[in-house]
Structure formats: structure tokens, C-alpha cells
Image (cartoon, one colour):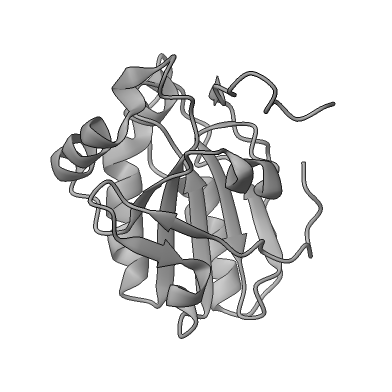
Length: 182
């Protein structure tokens, strides 16, 4: 996992409608949540509605959320931008859902799976990287406990006290030659 304290890599990506969004769009937000998600992954499907609720709840507290879809859409067309638009509408996403077409942003963040969550503080250093919660598609209901606890700590200007367990999900579907070396 990328080390805590690492600076957020800048990005400018487009949503499916072609509008550009960047990390700088959140310059007034004290906390930024970046989630790497996809449409087809059962782990993302399991928590997508609760993720939308958490995002909405914490937006009212100043947290800016960006979701980024990094998968190879040639091999996984269900993750392509037209389907991203449908997914955002169906799930009531109130945050930018962006397409990382060349996968450079997923590489820069060292994202490994969907879902994968990163939370940055006011100085845009990494304060949390981990799972949404302990639930899985076949075990438990998604509630976002791990992410909520981290956001609460960060917004209260406290160190994140809970464990930072790596996300579990579907491997990012890298284009040929794009997979990071291990």
C-alpha cells in the first residue's frame, strides 16, 4: 500500500459527458476522498448505494469526493463511459465519476482494485487508505464503518485511530503493458 503522508497526485480527468474535473476543484475542501470504482465489480455493486450515501453525508461536512473508473473498457465494455453515466444516475452519485482512459492516474495513486479508497487532509497528504468496511458481497451489509471512522477522525483533526485494512475487490483491469510491476 502507498505510504501514509504521501501527497495526492494531481489529476485532470473527464466525466462521461466530456467535462473536465481536477483535484484543484476541491481546493476549498478540507478533506478529499478519492475512490477507484467500476460498474461491473461485485464488490463495488455491494457497497455502491451506501458509498453514495456516505459521500452525500460527508459532502455536507466539507468532504469532496471523486470516483475514478480505471478499467480497460476494450476488454470490459460494461465499464465504458456510457454505462458510467447510467451507473451514476442509478446510484444517485452526487460527485464526479471520472474515466481514467490511459490508466495513469490509477498508477499514480497505486490503486490496485475496485473499490479502493484514499482520503487526503487539508494539505493533500494521505491520511487513510483502506477498505470501506468489513462487509463483502456474500457477508454482511455495507455500512462504510472503516471509511466513516477515518473521515470522522480527520474532520475532527485527530489521527486516524482505526486499523487501515487494504481494500478487497476486483483487480484493476489493466491494458496490456500498463500493469504496475510488483
